Amino acid sequence: MKAHSRWSLVGGRWGLATLLGLVVLGAGLLAAQRRRDRGGEALPNTRYDGKFTFVRLRYVPRFGRTFDQPWSHDYPRAEFHFGKILSEVSFTRTYLGGGNILTLDDPELFKYPIAYMSEPGFWTLTPQEAEGLRSYLAKGGFVIFDDFEGNHWYNFEEQIRVVLPDARLVRLDVSHPIFDSFFRIESLDLTHPYFGSPSEFYGIFEDNDPAKRLMVIANYNNDVAEYWEFSDTDFAPIELTNEAYKLGVNYVIYAMTH
Image (cartoon, rainbow, N blue to C red):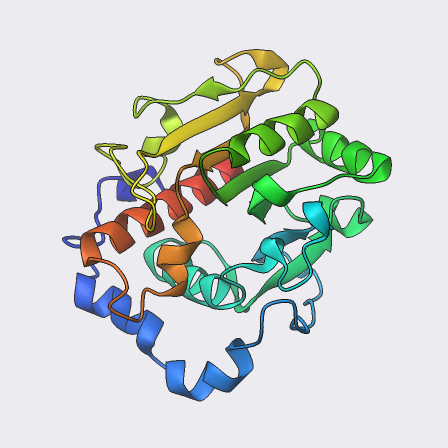
């Protein structure tokens, strides 16, 4: 894999038009399947078969929010689009039918090395879910927290403290290996796609030791999956969409090799 780590989505073997064309390909055919009202019925989970499958974590939202489900934001279009890109730019055997949705206390979670949570500013935990996530991380799991900004940090940090009371959230810079695990990401000078807040990236390390495995990454003041979801539209400049895909691919490759 390391031989490919200097590629970019623009100038690599696959040109930009080709890569984003892969996302657009079949979009009309799948539109009815992909689109649903937020909070509506999810697509059925696929059985584990050894392929990388995008796993989204489901939780009961704080504040009794019922008009939509924050954990489901960008679902399932982000999964469809990201899976296609990952399978084309790497040798990762990838499930291309979207992804699975699991709770933090579901034993099935332990079959999947990487999990994703949207909007942790609304995240709540039961004791069983806290224990499930704690065990998942201890056994080698990697979790991506995305789509939160501003004062949403405080709820995210509060819930993390329930799971890992002694964990230190460390701000990461571009020198960390996760930003060079496949694509070399030159800069983290990114902003939230809607609010313009400067993005920050935080991690939790095994045993709070930065020399050990990164178990958690938090895309604070960012919404990487939003770029994935709308990459077949003119939602954002191509350069920003590229950076979001590069971050996602790097996260997967790092987690699968550490």
